[in-house]
Length: 503
Image (tube, rainbow, N blue to C red; front, side, top):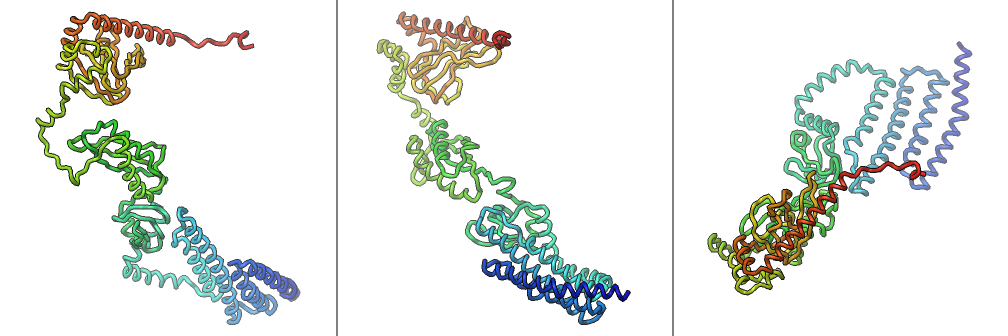
């Protein structure tokens, strides 16, 4: 037994005489290098060199060589100092790590920082662990009785601090559920802003005015929270704009889309969209839906879009309402009468057709007297083909297309119609089962001539009737060829390559 103790003393003597000086010298060299680099870890190295290593040497001398018992006061004091030196070094190291996380969050404002409650948790655990080691390991205090007393005390404290503990529990629930993180833009309890921090009791939210709201976590835990950053930052904003009723919806939509596409910050995908909300006189209301990358930019984008709408309305000749000085006194009967074009205007629109303009003035006046101008939106069906009407149509403005449905439901384009062309009878040819349709390619204005008037004028002008019949036959032949070609294409089957062809 004596020899074993002597061997242990010899080992401790070698450690103290040989390895301890080498360790102190090496740590001093490391500290000097860190100091030259102005490193924040210099303080950690200094604590280890000045306190931890010498205290370890003294503790090794007392326990290893002098064989003093752990219950001796001097051993406990040195042991306490040794554990506290390690704790000081650990706290200094954690402080450096926390500072780096906070600095990164300040440098990159778009990067989400860790909540302070999580940054403080490692230091709290370290302090608790050090206290446990000092009481249980160094001083030999039996903590079971202390825990029993602590249970009674904690019950009294919990009753006295119900609100505080409720906020603490809410903070822990917010961290575990993670409905938002520092850096997120949220809306909760009538507050919209950026989350600055989440701590034990409350969360800090900074609004667009730069004001900081400190909201108890208990209120946030019970509130509805809108997170504009999760699961992604992509966000849609809707702006409502009123346009004068006199503007055709197609032109108003094109104007608003032009302004939305030109607004900086509006994404191309998904594309902007415009929807008609209300149709009323004197104003029509539109909702413009735009997708942006970040909700925090929405006030600027709304402002830029509003400015561009003014310029786009002038470029597209789509007047905006001026409620500041426009007073509308609505008279339904008078407005209806005034909205009807005069006979001279109808006559001018009828004469855009070269075929009609060659007629006598009396025939043109007869057509204009009963003609009715109508407007059609882009994509709207002008002639369905299933109706029995044989009215004559004159395309006064815009472009249209004649289409026909194949037996399998496919839509085939037959002909393009430009301004001034005459059509209508082709849609109701009695010999055809597949009634063609006329669809507006752009916004169109069409003058509809009554069937009886068209027949009356054609009876006095044989050339006009001949041209009508020739056009109808030409379109019918083109429809037949188109349907036959499509049917032949559908019957063809892909041919497999032969061996010779493969070679």
